[in-house]
Image 1 (tube, one colour):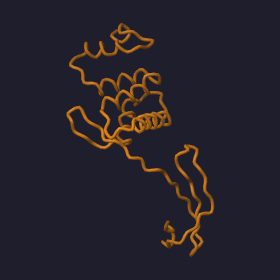
Image 2 (cartoon, helix red, strand yellow):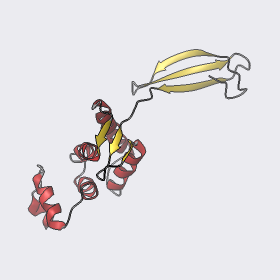
Image 3 (cartoon, rainbow, N blue to C red):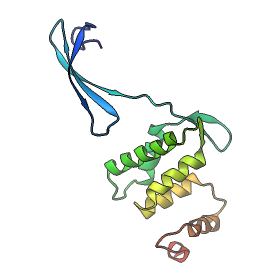
Image 4 (cartoon, rainbow, N blue to C red):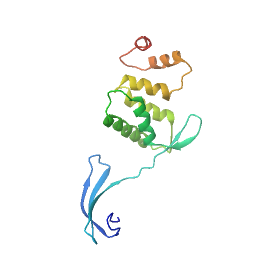
Length: 158
């Protein structure tokens, strides 16, 4: 590890701690040449799978894209940034736990909807309306009535 002050490659580790997330390690370091102290955080680089789009295209799984989609669905809703970030972590974990090299957009979308459904009805409906492609309003309402929850189709269509 190079010293950020003098760029010397000679540094030593003074202290090592596992972070609260359990997946990263914080190290306090000191440069042996200039005695500058600095901290680093080490994380495991996970091999994220490719996402197979509905039209057959493939692109790398992106937590940034997932985060922006969730932020859009949760816009102007009483949902904290911490809750949104936790949903991103949970969906990413589910994708990684699948151990597949490729996952479909349906798999990712269902994982997101499982996170949104108990949290906020409006955000859930917003995400579902973008994630699923509907021909018309009646198909949208019929799809929502298929899910189980405290509200019926009549509640949503009034």
